[in-house]
Length: 277
Image (cartoon, rainbow, N blue to C red):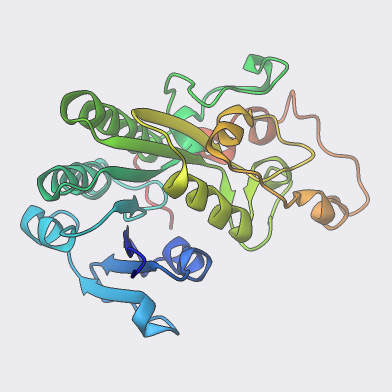
């Protein structure tokens, strides 16, 4: 008997995180449907993927792209602060169209790439012994952070009204390596990102879920509880980069340095609505 094939659609597949995840989520029995407004480069193993050029703000295009899909990983959007017009059009309207397309096409699960900036104004002092919980009430630090909080709320709406399964991942700092002291706490390694989204694809998790996307960092101060429930077991630790980041100096006081004290770090002092130059 032929084993069933799972189709997973990734929006924003041509972006940095989309490219990072493709190889880590490709496996026998799974076909990745790679969707972006600019046509993604075909993967090394073409039979494991389908490539579609589509604008996530176009409901007709997204509904067509979502046909026959078992889950959607929604990575598309502006990844930093920008004007209200751009943020609301691309990040919020785009997410609404992805969720509506999932509903119309009968896709049961959508995994949203949210961000720590949806709760960026929380501080270390707000954290209980187990770390800041996964389901913090939003306190965005920018229009970008607000768009991620709006994304989460839209996901909750589609769960409660239409019965979708939605997991929103509040991602920390997902890069090949941490590049500053803050990331010693917030880093999500590429391999752990693969483990996170694999857990989100395979967990028995109906309803709506918020989960932190962060590695097993020694200096982490965000809870690991929901990740464990999903089966996400991060392996990497940014501490191996600490000596290089600190240059032999002591870490700045995280209770007085806002880049280290607040979840959103430097976003909390960035002018709201100002695109990065």
